[in-house]
Length: 247
Image 1 (cartoon, helix red, strand yellow):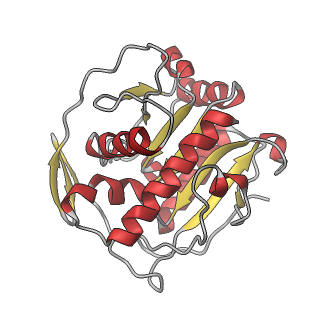
Image 2 (cartoon, one colour):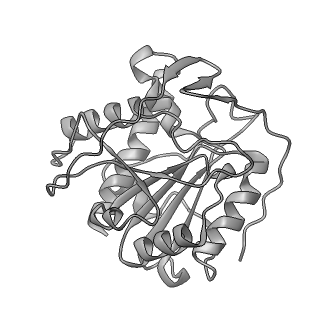
């Protein structure tokens, strides 16, 4: 089943050269050197070809990953690189060294054929992909591009009983609003793609639609978003990492 979701017109988020503009303020985007591979867990973010002149893969970088890796180090047995992370193109052979990857703003993602093949290879070799930060009509482009990567894929809703929601924290509800919205205005949806489209097999891709856990985590040091929802964002993110490392 290929998922089709009812949509509405989304609000535009502007990207400025050297700076990313958010409703809640500015953070300057600085592309830092990748961490050399040494076997320790390293957060890997995917870069991609821009669609229609609009970027977004770098949103929340690097504050989000720094905050997340601090939490991972504090409450799990993983000892990740806390002050460094990586950016990889989807066709970068180095990506295959990192079991978990993060894709932001796929509503404007338009991968080349080389990037399509690279991401397909990554997923088929056991990589786990977290998709985040898109909403409403941005679904259509994401679905189109994802089905270029995995033409056979069935994108399905994940039930609360799915193991990914119990891999570290026991998630008790999937009720979560998009940042700056109420549940009534825009409620998060959690979807996924399983190996061989079999829910009993490995989850290859987890999709946070109508959601942006990265934004919640990025601004957690500023107390911008409600503490309870920010805590939930960390719980989802850490569960994804633990699941990806153990499946």
